[in-house]
Length: 263
Image 1 (cartoon, rainbow, N blue to C red):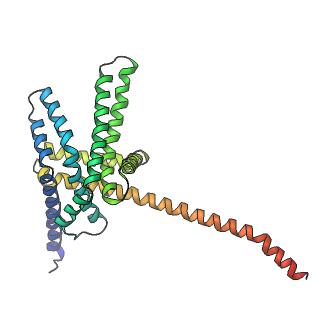
Image 2 (cartoon, rainbow, N blue to C red):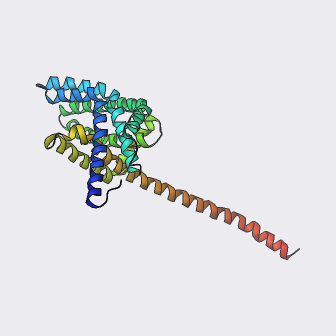
Image 3 (cartoon, helix red, strand yellow):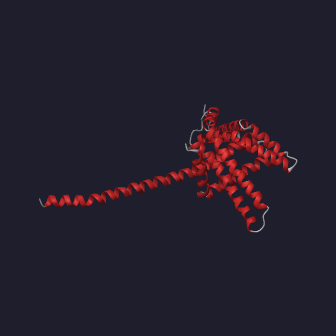
């Protein structure tokens, strides 16, 4: 039965609320250890306790939050590429299973880079003069890494590549498309701010799925433009090759005509 008019609008809204909430709940369930440690971190009584909890979160992240987030992005990819009625549970767990190893490896790479940046930030933060200025460079690289992480999940769920290529392309897309990347991180930041400071019920039901949709939507726009540019380059190369072939064949054709006129 298909609803029309106002009832149809309410039905569509309720349908999307259900989809977003189901995927978000699955995301939380598959990363329970990480979120549990996150709650412990928020309730930390001292800086040492907070640091220890962060270290534990970094250890479990590649095995929990990274595969779970990739699975969530796999569902968001289906939605944003026109497959709105895909089976939620099947698509989520297929994405979880198929991308688990690469998600884990990518998580290890990002956690390692993050640990290096954190160590350097702490070191340069205690320095004076020119070395102290380097902490702002480290901070900029950290922001770049965080933005590229969203592109990492989008690429992993959309393309088949080796893990190092995925990380490299995520960084290149971030650098090469600063406006889209900035727009994405601002919108995701708004979702996080509203979820943590205004409507905390969004965290278990909508926060992650909204971020996945926003992130993949931006990536899909960037990827579409890259494909258009590649197609234009391919067409120009094909046209150039055709002209070169015609120019190369022109003297031979003229010689044949000359011989035909003067047997």
